[in-house]
Amino acid sequence: MRMLVSFAALFVSVVLLQLGLGGVAPLDAISGVQLGFTTAEIGIIGSAHFLGFFIGCWWAPRLMGDVGHSRAFAAFTAAGTIGILAHMMVVDPWAWSVFRIASGLSVAGCYTIIEAWLQGKVTNANRGRAMGVYRIVDIIGSLGAQLVVAVLEPASYLSYNLLALVCCAALFPLVLSRAEAPETGPAPRLRPRLAWDRSPLAAVGVVVSGVTGAAFRMVGPLYGIAVGLEPGTIALFLAAYVLGGAFAQFPVGWLADRYDRRTVLIWLSVASVVACGATVAASGAGVVAIFVAAAFFGLTTLPIYSISAAHAHDFAQPLERVELSAALMFLYAVGAIASPLLASVLIDWFGPAGMFGFIALSHVLLVVFGIVRMRARPTPDTRTRYTYVPRTSFLIGRLLGRGKDDG
Figure (cartoon, rainbow, N blue to C red):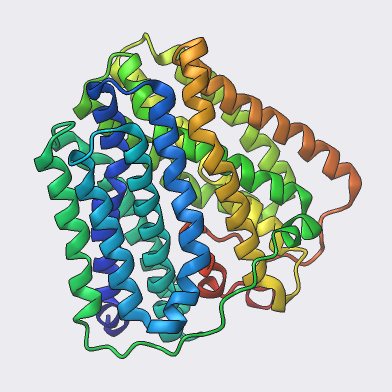
């Protein structure tokens, strides 16, 4: 309980950030439709978010080292708040893309600082409990962010102002906390090739995870509108996806720790292809069927990043783990930057099913590549334990403290 109280300010900031910045993506998509933006323009706005996310992951550790945790957190929160507030001041898809770069920058920057702060305070005795609570808080915040769009009117000053207020409120718990900020550690080197060198399959897996997650989160609302969902039910559609992924973590982790992770990854990707088909088939079967299909889609796709990361760490040395986590996050961002634009263009060309055809194809390629890699080398005898990895910042590997010697 004492540990929870000491980290309470950080966890409250996480929830508020998720509610404020996480609600922008579905609101932008629905607002863009109402304002007459093209599907491709809405896709570009979604891709811009992940471009800002990548910049924030790279820049945040350096800014934190220059000005300290609290000041850097305030700067990144201000960037996100400005990005949200500016939406209804300049109603233009290209301007919104710039604003979403600011929001992506804010998400990555704030999470980097929160995770660096946590890393400086946790010990080996309480790391497991702290990370368990952190993951729960992250999932609750993500779920709430998807649901918040249900009570917001699209393309409204009030809606964007409310999100900006919540985002700005994330400043108070951390900045006013009496807890002393930890010393700033060295920023991880960014070596994307390290992920490929340790596990080509893991590298491809996290790219596919980025393609899948970014397409669904950023362009999924367009799919929901196309199949007849109302704004309020689109929020439940996205929430079902998050819940499906949350429920998958324990059983998938159990399987990944007991069987060849490559086999689990391949079968998850096969199930993801089935989920894509089921989601398209459910589009005309009513709201409940669409929600169930979304939950199944989340259940099969969301654990893929964590399994890929665990497989990569199986081949890494302890001193490489932080840089390896950063490399995996980089590859995830690469897939996520391109995905929303491609998905939106395919919806324009082939209708709502085009997005899921694109996602299914990426998982088919992952299955084929996984089979090839299984023939290339055996699985290691000693493995790291499976860990749910939030895709939040390049520092998440340092915070997890994972290694072959800890489980």
